[in-house]
Image (cartoon, rainbow, N blue to C red; front, top):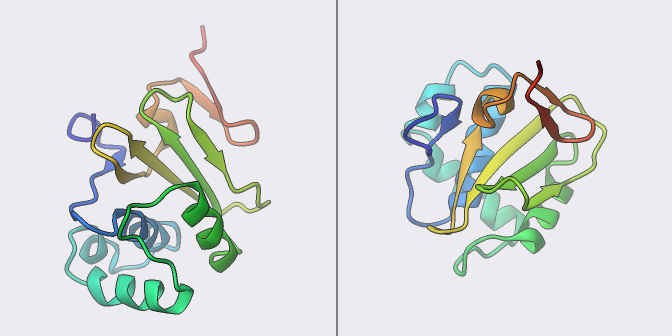
Length: 138
């Protein structure tokens, strides 16, 4: 699905994909001119290493809800939301913020990706950010 949707950014790493997805999301949200360098992996490794060292989060067994909760404490100004591929599995950090990090979790490959446009990623006509539900429309 990641290859089919332009609204989903593929995280191209075999380790620490949750940390990579978070770090790729933030430059996009803040309109950082280095966003493409982070997305393509040119500047991301030192930032991810610093993030994991600072937070003390270990992702050697992958990331899940417990790690997302700990990252939410570190990224207090961001609302972290993730969905599974079937759109039934979901985590919402419930932080009242316009800065929203949307992640997609592929439970087959156990890998996180970044959603830049939720409406496009979910193939919906509109999306309610308050209740996290997509509407098909008429």
